[in-house]
Length: 112
Image (cartoon, rainbow, N blue to C red; front, side, top):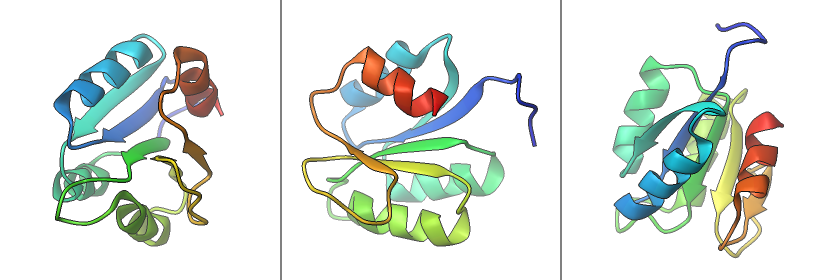
């Protein structure tokens, strides 16, 4: 567990490497960011590291959808604030980030 003064820990999940790089760069200095390109990689990180926030793309390829992954995370790690990057509303996430989103939106999500 980390203290209130520690930076937020954010997991970004997207099968597009460019999106992972852009979001990580936008959050640099605001949060500790880890990225995963697959649901399996995200689950491995969640099992081994604490996260405050998870940003997940809805379209993760053929493996699972982002909403399915976030459903699993809601059960296994309910304290993680979950945000879907998509155009549709999903009840198991805190909010849906509509693409394109800007830095102020990302900062608001991370700072809670």
